Image (cartoon, rainbow, N blue to C red; front, side, top):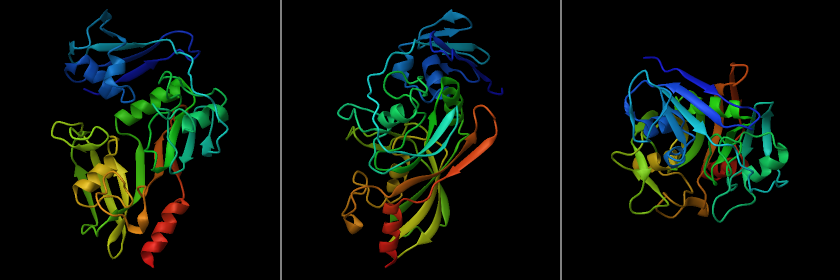
Length: 311
C-alpha cells in the first residue's frame, strides 16, 4: 500500500498542531509515529495525545494497515534560549528555509552544560523569530543536526509547514546527503555499502556502537583519493543515526582521521577533531516542490590536512 502522509498545521502557532497519516504496516502506534516522524523522539510522542480512527488510544496500541493516525502536538511554548549575534555562514535563504554552512566546533543546539554560543542562538538572532517551533523549547528551526566537530551544511526550517515537509523527506530517505572525510588506512575497494544497525553502547553511554537489534543504519562510500596511510572518501547517507559515519567506518577498520572518540589510537598531525564535512544537500523544496541542491567548499582545516598528507 502506498504511503500517504498529510499534515494539518496551524501556521499562527496559536492552536495545537496535528499530524495525520494512513498506516501502511502493523506495529505499536508510538513506534510507528517515531518512524514516520523521525524528528520526534518516542519519549516526546508518549507525552502527546494520539488518536486512531478518531478515538484516543494508548501509546502501546497496535495499529493496522489502513488505520488513520492523528498526533496532536501541544501549543508551542516560549523558548528560554537567548539570541546571540554570532557570525554564521548562510549560503541560501528564502521564506521557508535557510541553508547554513556550520563551522567545525560549533554546537548545533543547546544542551545541558552548553546553553549559549550554539547555532540555535545564532539563528534566533539572524532570523528574527522566523523559525519553526515544531521542536518546542530547545531546537527551533533545526530539522536535523551534525556533530559539534563535523562541519558543513544543515537545513533550517523557517516555519512549521517547511519543518514537517523536510522531516517527512528525512524519514522516507528522500534527502541527498553527501559528506567528505579522511580516514585512517588505505581502503582497498573503490566503493562499498555498510549496512549495520546502530544503538547506544551498553559500555559507554556517550558512544554509539554496532548493536544487533539497533536502529537500521546504512552508509555508502566511494574512494576519492588514496595516500600512503590514509584515504580521502565521499560518503552518502541512506539513514541518519547519531555518529553514523564515524561508527560505520570504525567498524570496518578505517576510523576518521582526528576522531577523538572512535579513533582509538594516536592521531596524525595531533588532530583532536574528526575530519568530516557535510558537503552536499539535495531535497524537494517545501513550497515550490522543485528539487534543489546545495554544495559547499571544503573548509580550511580540511584542505590544510589534505596538503599535509600529500607532503
